[in-house]
Amino acid sequence: MKHTISILVENHAGVLSRISGLFSRRGFNIDSLAVGETDDPKVSRVTIVADGDEHTVEQLEKQLNKLIDTIKVKALEPQELLSRELQLIKINATSQQRSEILTICEIMGAKIADISATTLTLEISDTTQHLERFQELIKPYGIKEIVRTGVIAIQKGAETIKK
Image (tube, rainbow, N blue to C red; front, side, top):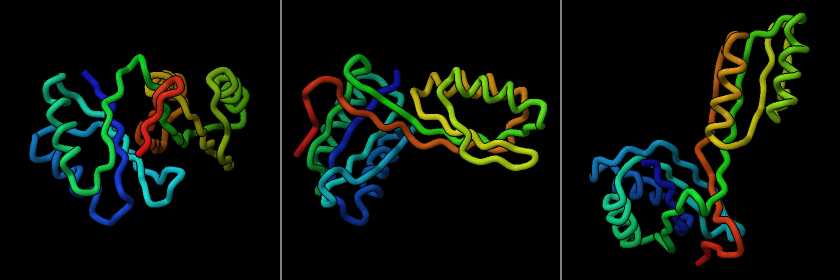
């Protein structure tokens, strides 16, 4: 089962290395990793999506809490989080295909980020599942390149993960 773990850490060099080392030592694969500053430039939020059972996630939470620069760790349940991922896709696009592609983009909530004589670069931000559906719709036009960010997530409702 996929698990989303949100970690607040002090914004210092080497923190990400210690976190990824912990996962590596436990033989736990990271599916997605995103790091960014919070509203406080001294604090970063690390969002990790990984596959594993409940016991493994519980052990990881405990181990992450022991790391020197860790402020707070929270495993987010699927029903209590909002998650998004950004995807850029460069596709082949003849002038005849552009109106079809624009219709797909409009329906799926994507936008054109760049255009050339033979390609379009599309930008979409949504859930992982939505991005995969969009990718399948665009695939027949000929995908030249895809770039995706890691998943970022925030807890629904009024509760926050703050220090």
